[in-house]
Length: 624
Image 1 (spheres, one colour):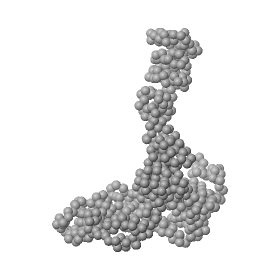
Image 2 (tube, one colour):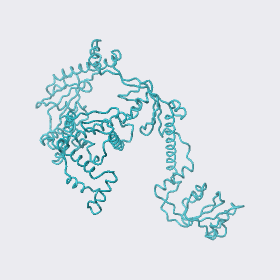
Image 3 (tube, one colour):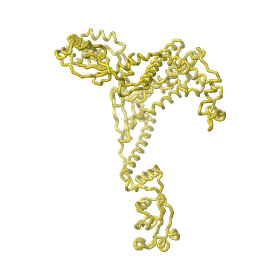
Image 4 (cartoon, helix red, strand yellow):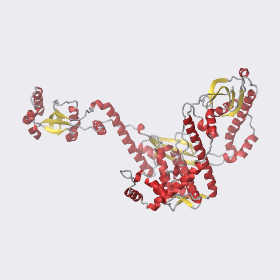
């Protein structure tokens, strides 16, 4: 019932329908085409086994799925990933054996019919193609019999799964009652008795501390900790050199490529070389400004063979001009057909250009994009520098350099964390990937610098030292923790005592304002209110009130103790859900129940079939 209440608590009005728990991930159709069992086992399940290669493939596939949804790979907890995948494979193997024991099987005719319906095996006309089917088998290195065996196994598994999950019963009347609970509201008055306010009244004796220690000794353990030296690097932390003209040109060319823009301008030139070229170029330019033909002057004045064809040198290609490309491109910027540039000094001499034809798309000039290109060029240089630095640090770490030497050689700030914990880590480096590397057995033993660990948009390298494993605390060491626990427990008990005494005096609305403490009026609230804590929301509607009266409820809560006063519960007459939505909700509720039944059934199968995990192979697969 608690699960169902939690399931429904987020509506009405916002979320009408939510997805139910995912079906067992490893029961999917992808297993139709799996290979044989590896002789190296990670688990023995009854008469069957889970192979090492099968396990590693499942882990890699699941890791890929998760990383497609999570940007920061360091947030992935590898230990939990391996644990969940192994459980899924064992669950599947248990169900496979049980399906075989119960005689659940599928005929070849049924498999043939299902395979003929697969789109992957159909030709362009929608008919089953033997060629495509044969090609499919060839690509996967399988025979028809192997495929049929895999298919039969999966369908038998589906039958057993459906027979458990699909039989969950939850009457529509009960679903409607659950939905109607979300329509309830009542006026609430509230007062919280915080346990911290009662700490001064708490008296603890040595015998109290000793008694708690004796009863909870096995749970009073020190956390495993190390002292951590680390380097942290991100692209944003790096200073890059000034952007050059060549850098801008490179980004401009990249922009044009990304936009599929090509320069379709056809140009002609007049090249002047030898002595007095500047004076000659100025005279030619003056004649062009007076209206003389560019082609005619090219034939008579140009010192380049292209002059014979009126100076035509084809479509503009910056690479032809080498180091002069930027100057030439700048001179040509914004020119329309027929326009002429001023004389340009290049490594060839002095050149004058004109645009004779332009069939290209509109192209923004480099100058007009300068600010944008400047930002892109800086980021490109920064990412390039970052990649080089990460590679250099990784090489030094692999060569056995200490983290101090690496920091000095690569000019990266060395940082330290004392008492870095393995559990309940709230430090700046609390990512599971970092914790796993910091407490890796070989890293600790060798006090080595780890390879780079990707964290957010940066990389971290860590070197642990002074490892202190978890151990049972002595009474002296545990006393501060016990003292805090007992103080909170006893202070909470005192707070609850006051809350109950006050609750006993409230019977009518008039009693609310007669108490020694002020009860805050929250007005009319429903089960979805955010003004109450999760536990308080459950308490607020746990007891009815008499007509024209109120009910006072005192209970221990997250803050210490809470006193809630409520008037009679009111229920909205109009449900926000249609009949169709109610039916869909009922299906989701039943599926949730079915998943619970499936887990209960798997727990039963674990008693029927002996499950043994090969810890050595597991540790090897996890890189331990």
